[in-house]
Structure formats: C-alpha cells, structure tokens
Length: 330
Image (cartoon, rainbow, N blue to C red; front, top):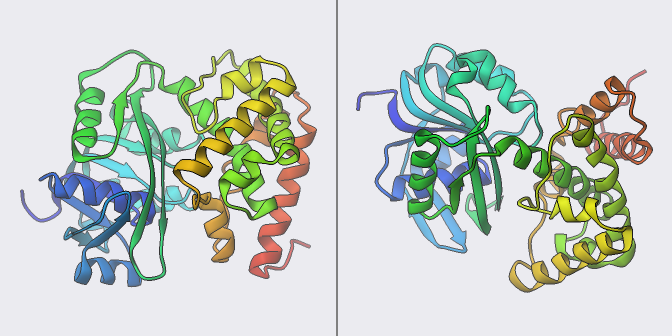
C-alpha cells in the first residue's frame, strides 16, 4: 500500500485507540494511527506501549495530518465525543470502505453517515477498557467484548469479517444482528456509570458494590431506560451493566444485580476506573453535552419527565466547570 493507504486507520490515540491499533498491527494488518502533538511524537519514537492484560510494544505508522489519508478499508473512531465533526472534516476526501465509532453516546453514527453515507457505516460499542498513563504507556484493563453490526439490523459479511480480524488480533469482538439495541443498552448503562464516577470519584467496583450508590445507579438507569421504551427499542444485558435485568425486575432486584457486578469487578479488575474519572482528574473536558445532554434533549422532545437525569446533568456540568476552573456562562 502507498502513503496514506492502510487496512485500518485509527482516529484517536488515547487508551482504546492505542489498544486496538497495537493489536491489529501486531497481528500483521497495516494500521495508521491519527494523533497530534506530543502523543504523536511519542508513538513515532517509542511505538504503542501496551501493558496490563498483555504487555508488548508495537511500532505503527503515525499521521499528524488527517488530510494525508487517501484510502482505508476500515476507519475506527476512538476520540472523545466533543469535536468529532471537526475531527472528521479533514478526512472527508479519503476513500473509506467502512467506518465505525467506539465513542460513548448515540450521535456518532449520524456524524459518520453525514461524511460517507450510511451505507459505509457500522454500529459499534466497546465493553472494553484501558487507561492512558502519563508515562506514555497504555494500561489494558478489561477485554470483554467489542460488538459490531449493521445499522439497519441483520447480519453481514463485512461486520463478521471485521469482528473476526479484531478477535483474532486479541480484542474480543463479535458481529451482531441487533447493534441498535446494544448501543442503546450501553448508552443507558454508561449514563449511570459516568454520573457515579464523577460524583463518587471512586474506582468502579466500589460504587457498584455500595448499597446506596447502587440504589441511585439503579434508579437512574431505570429512568433513562424510558427513552428506549418510548422509541420501542428493546434493551439487552450485553452491555457494561445488564440493563434489561436492571429495568425488568424490582428495584431491590436491580440493586442486587448491580452489587453482584461490583463484587465480580473487584475480583477481576479492582483498579478499573471509568474514562470519565480519568478525564476529571486530568482536568480534561468531560463528555457531557453529547451524552447526558443528548438524553435530556431527547426526553424533552418526547415530553418525558426524567428528574434524576436533569439533576445529574446540571450537577456533572457544574463539577466539570469547577474542576477545570472555567467561568460559568453569564
């Protein structure tokens, strides 16, 4: 392949972009990582340094100018949600066979479709975790599952092919026929987990295990689940939280499901921290408008009352500003 051409291009060299890019390159695929500033310089010199569940260093091609991308078979978007449209704009002229995003939230697929058309876009969600360390290394903490599927539903050879490549490279992945259900399930789960990580500032298993924080989490998940119900979207347990079970049973049962998950996480990933908490402590902007804000706006459009969501949306927004010492709007 020539300059600016690759099988895979990874937009974003944070934890998840680094983990996926390193594994694909190690498996023999041609990979371009699109990064900026010091991160780009570090990768160019030292490669992608992965430790945690596995430990290896993988050299990859790094591009600092997305406009240099000419053709890629698969584009994987792994940036934070804010500024996605601006980040995609320089790639508009690139030939992209298939694009998918592992970002949080639900606006990502529409953003990709506006650039390359819905026929080139797959839905995706990653129940997989990592943390970008100050040393430049990437800590790989959880390798549960990365789901990929057609936006219109059903199975396809391209989703199966990409999932198989990821899985064989060491990222557990599978193609599914109901990606919309899974994306919504993850979004609802992530909304509750994001709020808890910001307000408790604790490692994940602790706020899942505590009876009071588990209760608040259960109530928020059950409340936001009304958005999916209003759109007739079935929910699933195949997400970071078993959303269908949390919503389908009693409140007491939901709390026990969450606490049980906390006990399991304590055993298998005691140091796991939500990416939101990592951003908060590093004073990076939080993904609020595109996630909690999207849910609040959707509820307003549907005339749904979600008081817990509204309260936490305001609280997390204020915490984000105060933590970064940003002046509030006048």
